Amino acid sequence: MKRALITGITGQDGAYLAELLLEKGYEVHGIIRRSSSFNTGRILHLYKDLHESDVRLHLHYGELSDSSRLERIVELAQPDEVYNLGAQSHVRVSFDEPVYTADVVGLGSLRMLEAIRNVFGASKTKYYQASSSEMFGDVREVPQTEKTPFYPRSPYACAKVYAYWQVVNYREAYGMHASNGILFNHESPLRGETFVTRKITRGLSRIVAGKEKKIYLGNLDAKRDWGFAKDYVEAMWLMLQQPEPDDYVIATGQTWSVRDFLIKAFECVGLNWEDHVEFDPRYLRPTEVDLLIGDAAKAREKLNWVPRTSFDELVRLMVQADLALEGVADRMVPK
Ligand code: NDP
Ligand code: GDR
Picture 1 (cartoon, rainbow, N blue to C red):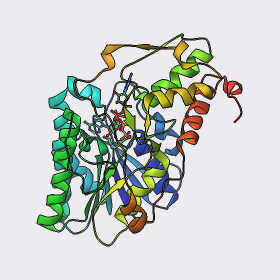
Picture 2 (spheres, protein in one colour):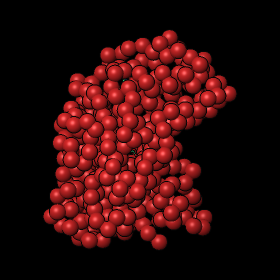
Picture 3 (cartoon, helix red, strand yellow):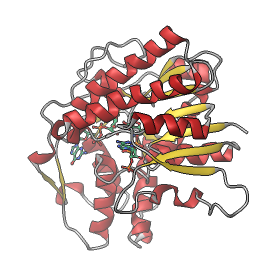
């Protein structure tokens, strides 16, 4: 039985990846943070009481800021594959908390690489790094590929660039099977509620349910290449099944503005978005990433990976899920 260790297992991607690996027969170990409130809601359906049979999901308390604990968990889990998804992943928040973000996102990734090297040397464990299209920032080329130069535009993106190069260096210096997945935005009903897509679909469903009147947003002109998270975690797994480590762009190849997302989401319930959206400058960023669009040709050729969910389907499935949470699923306008 293969063993995987996932940092950030309680997040959107961690939950989908854990589900995928359990389906594939893996024993899955996840690192969770101690919290005074419940933070395992996204993986609850995967969790079994330790006294039941066939328990293959194991959770360990830990922190990307704590090297010794990471090493201990690597020793305990003996992973064949490590997926480093843990992060302070909110770009706007990284302007408020730049040092913390750099510590967790940048140094945290280095701590994880070192934990693996200290426990096993370089050879045993394959490593996946959650790199990001935010690294392209002020884009130098359209569409963006693995060869496009980075120009990060936030403390978060700067920290991701640092982690990206550590991964390349561990590969070259120690021969580690370490890969960067440069993933463009991917969303789902499990998306954190302060990211713009989920903020819109959740706000919309609460408006339909009569609980709220407005959604307050920042820049509606930013364009993103939005895919479905469930499709994207499959690409992470595929990268670690390759004989050689490498870096891959994962994207749909289409770009849409925040305004496009609003229009499509409100169309799902037959409302006009302009009646319900207000501008709030608090949601603007000191430096913005205006346009992202990825070219995933390398992933298509080498990993045989293609996105399966269109932008229209993504918007509809997110709206449908949030309407259901509010008990108003019947308000979805049929296509
Ligand atoms: P989420 O914000 O949903 O999840 C982040 C996870 O990291 C959570 O499990 C969180 O724990 C954990 N975490 C936060 N801080 C720490 C810490 N100090 N120590 C250990 N764990 C920590 O992110 P996503 O699932 O959306 O993204 C997964 C990864 O992929 C992240 O690294 C993100 O930066 C990157 N990425 C995401 C993209 C996207 O579009 N979603 C695109 C490209 C890259 P808790 O639940 O306790 O907060
Ligand atoms: P992003 O995602 O910054 O691309 O990072 P987010 O959904 O936060 O923003 C997308 C765009 O929407 C604009 N926007 C708003 N954003 C938020 N969060 N809230 C608002 O009210 C709002 N109004 C407008 C933003 O300015 C931006 O242009 C995500 C994260 O998952 C990162 O971890 C990941 O690396 C990248 O995607 C790829």
